Amino acid sequence: MDESDRVEAPARKPATVSPLSRLGETRHLGLVVALVLLAVVGLVTVPDTFATTSNMVSILSLAATIGVITVGMTFVIIGGGIDLSVGAIMALASVWATTLATQSYGPFVMIVCAVLVGTGAGLVNGLLISYGRMVPFIATLAMLVAARGLAQRMSDRRTQLVQQGNEMIVELSTSRVLGIPVLVYIFALVVIAGWVLLNRTTFGRRTYAVGGNPEAARLAGIDVRRHTVMLYALSGLCCGIAAVLIMARTTTGSSTHGDLYELDAIAAVIIGGTLLTGGRGSIIGSILGLLIFTVITNLFILNGLNTSDQLVAKGLIIVVAVLLQRRSLESRT
Image 1 (cartoon, rainbow, N blue to C red):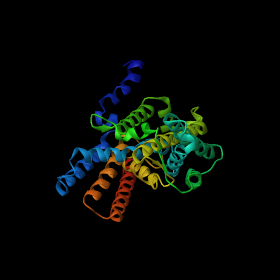
Image 2: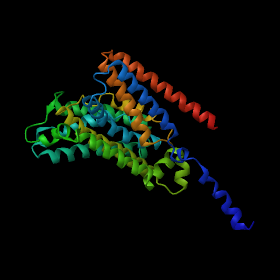
Image 3: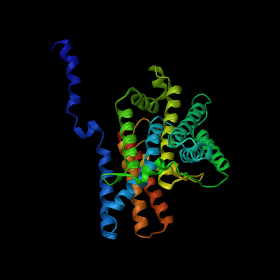
Image 4: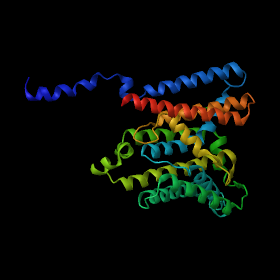
């Protein structure tokens, strides 16, 4: 065997890897099975209401707002960070976009305002973490408090209604295409864009590299600090989009919007298989995790169960997911 054969022979072995392993979807199979089991529970306990078209649309509409935030959270956690401020940033964006001054310029300005406010707040998070060298937990916790407080001050703790003339915002929730609200399509577009960005671009590859080993990424020529700023700005952008969706669903802007959304988003990302330490994860896994949580919430509502029990169930699911992650890592080492 000549030198070229010896070099090329090992390179042919990865071609025998199974499709499931190559695509990294094996861990998603368990999530799909969990969704199927939850659907069976719904069909058994509330057969007259669970499988209806209106209930399916309700589940998708409920998942859309948190789902957009979850996409941004997935990028941040894969990149080795955490963002506790997403719910508060969404609330601030919704309040800023629904002030009388902003609404006087029309719905397009309202949308742009929400997106810019969200992106700006995320940018501040990124700058504090990257160049201020603050721990992500502390920086985003400070933003959570500050953004929520600013939203309360701007709205005077009152709910701001979307005024007449700006019905286009509300129509994102009321208008339907093929029986599905427009806001669900917006959610789907964000998921597709997030998947492409994470899996088919240099930005996505750098995100995995930064989360897996920041020092190795730096030595490889990646500007880790700049990339971290971009990750948090992306998370803020998703919060701004989510603010538009919550305004459409509720026809309001409020400082109470997004309460505990950060916990739901983080939980969905963890359930989806993304490591809290960074370097591994997927958009599809996070969305499946989100759908599991949303269906559980829907089942509790349809069965008239206590909200407190629902929170306990979600907490147990998070604990099990983290334990499974740790066991998986230990088995690999």
